[in-house]
Structures are given as C-alpha cells and as structure tokens.
Image 1 (tube, helix red, strand yellow):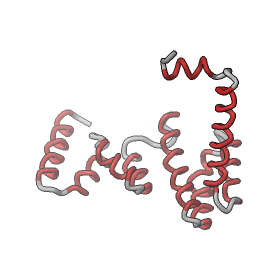
Image 2 (cartoon, one colour; image 1 turned 120 degrees about the vertical axis):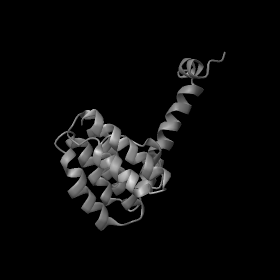
Image 3 (cartoon, rainbow, N blue to C red; image 1 turned 120 degrees about the horizontal axis):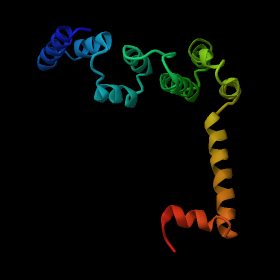
Image 4 (cartoon, rainbow, N blue to C red; image 1 turned 180 degrees about the vertical axis):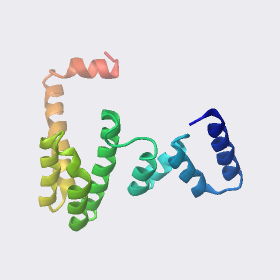
Length: 159
C-alpha cells in the first residue's frame, strides 16, 4: 500500500470513528489490514463472539502464515469447541471439530485425538476438575513431606 493510500485509509478511519460508524471502522481495519484494533478484538473475545474474532483476525493474518498465527487460530477454534461441549451441543461441537479443528490434526495428531475424546464425556468439566484435584493433592503431599518446600520457597520468596 502506498504512503498516500495509507494516509487516506487513516483519514477515512478517523472520520468513521468520529461519526460513530463502528462496524464500518472495523470492517475497513480488517479489509485494509492497516490498523489492528486491539480493544475491539479484546471486546469480541470477552463476549465470546468467536466467528467475529476469527473473521477480524483473518484480515491481518492467515492460519498458515506462521506458527503464531496457527496457534491463535487453534486456540480460538478450540474455545468455540469447548463452549459447544459446555452447552451440551454435541452436533455443533462435532461440526467445529470436523470443519474448524481438523486442519490442525496434521500438526498435532495426539492433541486432536484428545480433544475428540471429550465428545464421549457427559461433562468434560468433571474430568478437568478431577485432574486439577489430583495435581493439587500431589503438590500438597510433596509440600507436607518437605519435598516441594524449596520450590514453594522460591515461588513465594519466604523463609
């Protein structure tokens, strides 16, 4: 994009912002790839609007551009999948798994298999909670036995 074009896009963005044409601002940001609006992106992430998050992000980077892009697209799609499972919407979860997440299976087949197995659970949160409790109990046992004291001491900087 030439310097003149960039300046023109910036002026148009400024005008649209001043006139409160919010959707037009974000569409132009996305289409031009000129200005990434982190505040807008964060708002969409916090609202759980995953399709909009991915659509906006794709104006600036593509899944296969680099490993960082791949990671963030994977995390967005994984979150969509987990939220569908949390709502007990298995049909939507399968759709996300097959259409959105399948592309990542070639890079980490084991992880893909693990997230696929979540479909078989009635409540995947119970498994996660059980894992957290197990980890906490193991840590507590080590601390009680004095084995983990040195790590705890370093982390909290006491003693």
